[in-house]
Image: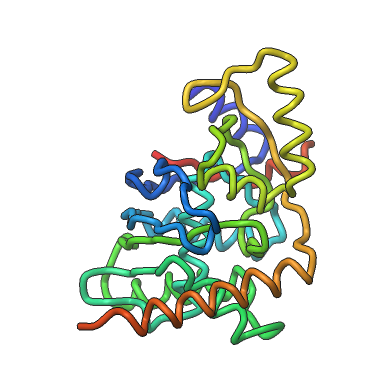
Length: 242
């Protein structure tokens, strides 16, 4: 609480969300190709007030810092649920594993901004008399994914062959992650959930990589559907998982 108060005194905003972590986060990637890995669904919650605070910060051009990969996945999932409102079901808002990639491929350069997408979610739920957003996500963030909301990420050092390693590599770039992890091992840093932390900054996605991953995701999604029946500038606004 002292740290949070200190940050607020410096003009840094603070919001919270909750992702109920399950196998979707910790299940190792054992498939030969990332596209063959199956993500389990995880539920999340965020109050509309906290969501509105993030929207205001985005509108003001403030940088959004996610504390934990869980916070990052919630914000990124909310973006795509705002872009594609048809994924809002009576039981909640549900984002599939590869939905983000196929939607991005369809929209191209016409994809809405973070402010526009999150505002869609906020307005829709507010008009329905809701005070919070409840949903589930299977979003698999891998290299080639283009982050829409998060500018920086504070997270610990993750284990190999995990979806979390895919996420941080997508966020900061493979070379940055490899270099930082080698340094962490050389310096005796502690890994995993109760270990040391790293501060990562979002890197642009190479166009060729983005096209490849989007194409692969679309192909996999089509195949699956055919089989299924029925003054640190980064610290402007910090989002943490409860």
